[in-house]
Figure 1 (spheres, rainbow, N blue to C red):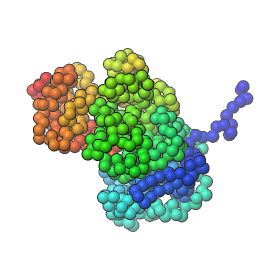
Figure 2: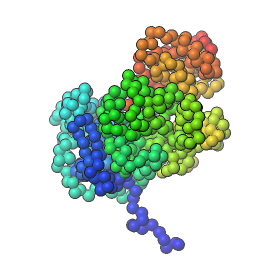
Figure 3: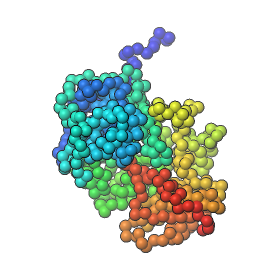
Figure 4: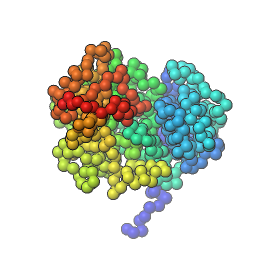
Length: 553
């Protein structure tokens, strides 16, 4: 069979951009996008709009491998640009909208962005950022009327700074444009900057092949059917919305876009549009189930969450309202969710609390991924599958990044010995299911004992007075480090709960070395734009508090 080799007929580069082309043919008259009360598109219209924008970008001199950045909320334009930018041959860079101007400027300089699309709400941020650059990108304004922009308003920064309007690029572009296919499926398609919750952001580069596989794998693992109604509660700028912009096109779904993540609005959109699927961090699920709107959903809504385990009480509340919660694990470096808590039918016979505990585990690799393991630091040997022995989570598969842009040292540290080293700490259970315990940098070493901040948080979440919690290390003159808990309380309880009461609650439910020695009450815990609690900020607060001296333990 030596004469049978790859040829032009069987080795065309894989790219997720083909999903849109097919959606236009198969689902042409079906609704692709809904936004507020005035904007609705079909898949045929979305395809043509993306082709027009890609054509305009080419006319502006954007060429293969140029970086085009986008600073936008979850609007129709933001969704379209996930296709339009790479259809012009460029590399897409979505920018976190909650960054300050100095950081945005650093990222634009680092990725050498040639053009920046700017949501009108963030126009002042963009102008301030590019003014710091010697070679500023071309600025294109994504305009909206006041109703669409919402209460943030649509006040535009200095109009002279913007060379073009997004609407004009759509109107003047060629709908017959032949979009630029990748020369190789290993060509870069996106560069995403990590959330920076534990360190300086890094530019993660993914190729067409990896995003193609990740998009289809995400649909299969979550069992997303054809024609779903997907509500965009996950910021698209966060790892390209875990690849669901491309995935929803593949199944001809409806994208319900929204600018604000507010519980009453989300509940209304679910009701009005018959939402079937949505994604978000555990804090988003907590927000939805803690709001004043507590009516049971008319039909089930599938909610995919990833990262740290959702607290058991949050899972139980969500299920009682009609949310079907799936839990998984992924990183920017793998483009989406690559580990999921694959559900076994026999688990349905278990008590609700036990089901919630099992659902809180991250699970097993998805069908499109290759291998996941937990290894000892140093030796690289697999840890015991006892659900107790902790180690670093490592993985390999088609959607692992090409590497960090302009960071060969960081790339070598993360990609070595045939594995991607995640920096996350986990355990492997006897049934082969993975459970995250912490970030390596968030493990608290107290008196020689390793304390998982996630485990302490899980106990605190069982306290009915607690709304949100994050645990970090605080210096201690005797123990080295001790847990410090930052807590927000449920409404009306701010002045009725003391630090000692919270500590005593923990003493009753965990080993004494794990008990927080300090409890700091906040009205609300800080969040990143993806709903994560940036522990590095809390660590800075704990550090400024100084070391504790007298042990309560």
